[in-house]
Amino acid sequence: MTHLQHLPLGYGGEFDLISAALERWGALASGVGDDCAVLDVPAGQRMVLSVDTSVEGVHFRRPWLTPEEVGYRATTAALSDLAAMAATPLGVAIAMTLPESWRSDFSRICDGIGDAVRSAGAHIIGGDLSRGDALSMTLTVVGHTASPLSRRGARPGDALWVTGRLGGPLLALRAWEAGGAPSAAARERFARPVARIAPARWLADHGATAGLDISDGLSSDAGHLAAAGAVQLVLNLDRLPTIADANVEEAAQSGEEYELLVAAPAGLDTKAFEAAFGIPLTCIGAVVPPLPGEPEVDTRRGGVRVTVPRGNDHFPVA
Ligand SMILES: [Mg+2]
Image (cartoon, rainbow, N blue to C red; front, side, top):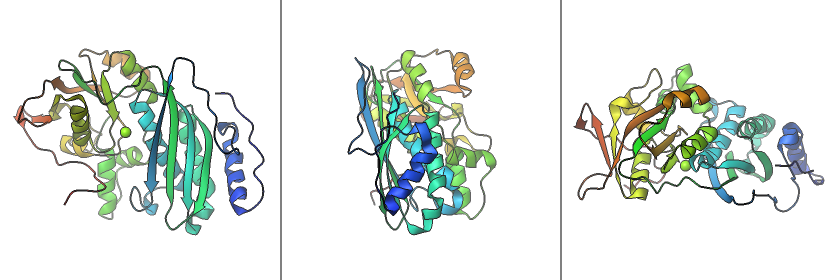
């Protein structure tokens, strides 16, 4: 993406804050100040777009994270949806509600946003700043791809694959909610998740038929993949890759992982994947035809069918 000059912003407290952010972002922000961002999508490619909100008190609490981590994490969560579609990120637009109590941390939040945008190879293309009672960030992400990886498309005969190691965010949340402190490994996975953009491209190039990013928890998201593809997934809990202090049940429930769950041919070159990206790629099950009266996800432990509690739901049905 070519860097575009910003337009002059005008005067006033709001513009002073925006100018300060643009100064910190430098060449990372592009063409800000007009009414809309204007993007070029490479010929023959399709634009993909997603939006994601992160709200203080819902997605995180202030004592848990540094202001940089608050910005980084919210931005990575949004960018992860581009990874889920195996798209290449283009731009990020940020709508932020900034309470007075966070105002002195604004620059540090912006540094975290910039950090996430930079690691995804994207640009900041616009935004909106408003006053309000709780810190809230809504990030719109735009990317492109010739062949989007959908949730729909898993075929019986595919294997089920997951990137990285799971369990960290659940353990971190559990420790904080109990008034304690998480292990460094669990905290890192909550505070510094990674949008798996290049690994997703690799998987798409190696025949992935369907995929998504794990935001609700592997067991819930496996249900989404099964439902979208009208298939059954056999999930072998014993094979789940976990961070050191998590067990496989915790790994299956843990949300906001931003690892990828994909259906792809069996026999992928996991060594080549790990050498390229420094994270494991693990076969955790199989895609089979749907069976009437059977669950969408047949979760097994030691060969026996088990039930894993569902992950996070913002609006649970009573
Ligand atoms: Mg997603």
